[in-house]
Length: 123
Image (cartoon, rainbow, N blue to C red; front, side, top):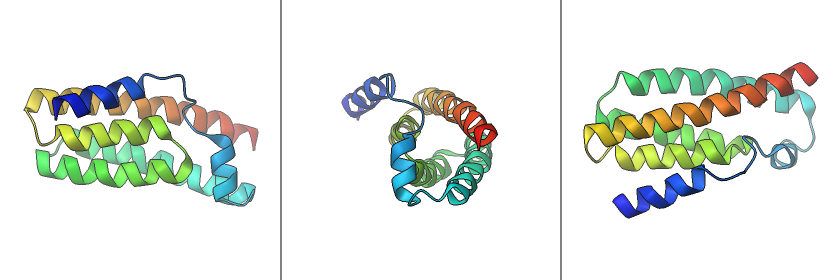
């Protein structure tokens, strides 16, 4: 599991944009109001889920991270999806490892939320 975690952490640190805008456009068939709705929903959900993770036990963290991973994939937030997957894996390990994974996930979420704010202002 440690090797899987290390590989996922390396992927998170890449130069990929917080949200793949072209992917999002393809998923919404270019419907700007649908894009806006999905981004707003993800913004609220990500904020809520990370707060719940910080207050939950390991099994709940794994479930919440899995939920967030799916949502992130849906909007093209690859860094968040990979960080959520790493958190899901870390939830099965030591508490310190899980806490560190949640912190990395929170950082990826904040990066995505910052871009979402910019995108929503531009629409």
